[in-house]
Image (cartoon, rainbow, N blue to C red; front, side, top):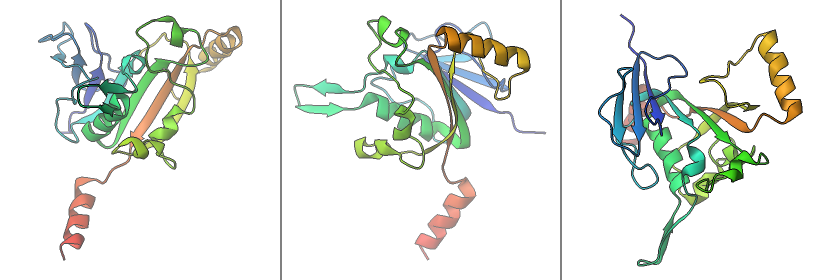
Length: 212
């Protein structure tokens, strides 16, 4: 019997989204909730200050809808005269809980759309080059403590309408997307990123070589 695939939706609100239609669904939201009418398990956590409360390599995919823009880039602790980078830490956590080749699907209002700046709680403005801090070959976020590595599967401007923008849309959707691009309605960026990490077998082989 094939293994069931598991998805995690971050900042899920009342109902977690499941863009890949996987069999088991979890959600995390700052408001603690035990369950959702869909049957998903929803856990309370503040991901600007806390790690994702799951073990390494737990999920086949993770999603974040209109969420990244609410995670601070920098947090200051004046008492200890230190700073941390919550968004970089969150991206490390997403990489950690994804299985090898697991996918992150994120959709975020992005610059230069005014929707990226309209909401006063938007503190993390994404651009079309921000992914380079987390993706090969640059992985520029390592200078700020990013611990993972992603491969860019795709990045695209979209109208924030659907739970999943198909990789190969039909002619009708292509025409609609073109119209929305020309009219400036495509305010959000999709990130679809693949977690680059060793499989358990590769990790065991590397450990054996290191100890030989």
